Amino acid sequence: MLHPTLLPDLITLSAQKYPQAIALTDGKLHWTYDALNGAIRGVAAGLRRVGVERGARVAIYLEKRLEAVLISFAAPLAGAVFVPINPVLKTDQVAHILRDCNVGVLVTSPERLASLNLTDCPDLRHVVLCADTKSQNGGQYSFEINWWSDLFNCPNQTGHRVIDTDLAAIFYTSGSTGKPKGVMLSHRNMVAGAISVASYLDNKADDTLLAVLPLSFDAGFSQLTTAFLVGARVVLLNYLLPRDVLKAMANEKVTGLTAVPPLYLQLAALDWPEAIGQSLRYFANTGGHLPREALATLRQRVPKAKPFLMYGLTEAFRSTFLPPQDVDKRPDSMGKAIPNAEVLVLRADGSECATDEPGELVHRGALVSLGYWNDAEKTAERFKALPQTLSGRPDGLQLPEIAVFSGDTVRRDADGYLYFVGRYDEMIKTSGYRVSPTEVEDMVYATRWVGECVAFGVPHKMLGQAIQVIATHADPSRATGQNDVLSECRVRMPAYMVPDGIEWVSGFLPRNPNGKIDRALLRREWLERHS
Image 1 (cartoon, one colour):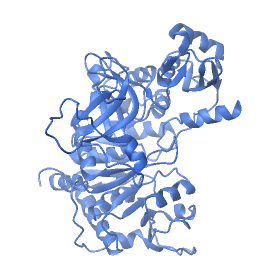
Image 2 (cartoon, helix red, strand yellow):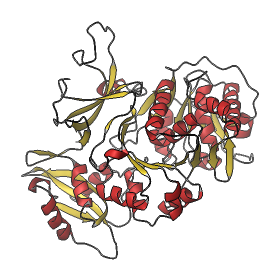
Image 3 (cartoon, rainbow, N blue to C red):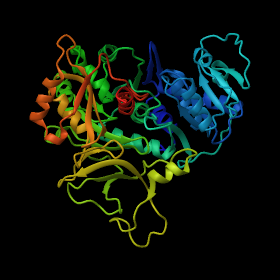
Image 4 (tube, rainbow, N blue to C red):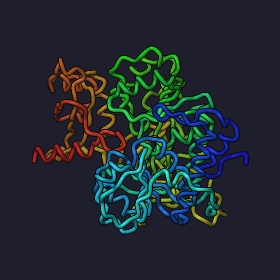
């Protein structure tokens, strides 16, 4: 086998090429590719021994640790489907996911199991507990308790037949606009994504990637797949404070960091150890727009590191990136489509938009996922057949091609670069204009008086919607008044974009489980306070 076809091939092929290279660092433990490959095969055999059938769902409710990585690759090797659950979710959210995708096996820890209420999960047959030693578990359960050591030490068994179009994983969205939806990813989706991202990040075997994002987040899991594809090393990090991230980057000589804007905002406010700049080759942003001021500060901290600004959808992994050489010329751009993908900008009637005309971002290609688990209505909303009239589709094609219609409004300039306008359901409609909240936020950040901020629309009798901002102070010891910031906004913005008001809060703004600022929650709470 020369090229990876299935998700576990990423490790198998690197084990053949770099058997003694370190693949994974978990605290003080370092696992070589050869050892990791052998362990995954052992765990896959253990899953078969407990009766895991082809296509069965295996959920993982753990922090970032060795067992979470092993089961993520062992389950698809056994012909099953892994379902990573964000470790910050609480019992009701975990139970919803277990019920929604009919999980048969749950891998967790004794402490996490004790916090869950699993009485309404009828499909759950086995719980595998990860612990250093076995202990008596006093609970009465409707499922069988297994221990990781028993699963791990099983002899190899013949597995189920698996091909690249088979379902490999179900990643649940954060659920900021309702209950989380399970995005179904095939082996082909995940391998194609790894190849595409590693190609433009130029990942090599001598890279060390720091895994700071949850492994239940597609960009977080991507740190594993892109590293394993090329024989690089991944360092797992469960951090409490942003300073812990900087410490790990310096100690582990990290060459690549991928994070979301809220974390980068926190990191930008800290002093960086000099050692980071000696090893860091790139830093990549995903999960939202990185404000110009934060980007500029990060580039000052590590001037030799290349910035990659990325845009992605869980439904299609990554979609676009802005090459580092274009950052100074187009700092507000999302860039262009990643390798092996095409991004279209379409009108509501399916025709292509003209230059600089806002339209819906539509992603086509090998990374388009298999839809939402057990939700035909939501799948039909987002996964649609491309219009036959689009360029590139010859008349003789009989079968429709399914693409992801993102719900995001973007525009494309004359040189083909894309710019984010806003999510369709988050756009603020004020004074007859449609205003992007991210554009408002970017201008508020430019005042340098806010640490974090979020903008949203609220009902207004005259305007339709007024623009409200919630923000934290950049320097809590020098609290800036609302009028100071609004005066600066009036200089920078047209009148219809100036916020109606700014509310100051202390600490950090709330995040959703994937680490993004929870705009929907803040808007809902604002409306409750002012009702």
